[in-house]
Image (cartoon, rainbow, N blue to C red):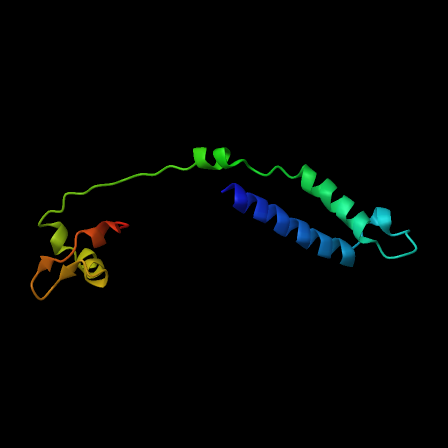
Amino acid sequence: MKDEILNSKDTIKEELKTFLKDNPPDKFKNYCKPLDDRTIEDEVNIIIYKIKFPEPTEILQKLDIEYSFYDLTVEDFKDKDLLEEFKERGVINMNNEKIVEIEKVFGVIK
């Protein structure tokens, strides 16, 4: 996750460099020559420094995983939408009217 945060930071830096080359800030408009790469790099670093990028632990603390288990009843199998979803996922075989693979119901990763 830390790599992805760093990748995002790098992407923002590159986009800022391009943007600042095409749209120099007002404080640089009086320069006689086009902005050099070092000036742009300094300005990008100032902007990046002001952005608070989250730490991986902050992101992970906000994640919740919930598991729900259901006991299917005869009434559930009368629900046409549920049966259609089971057919689409290959969970139930309507020819034999039996559950083919229970793992497909829950999307178990093997």
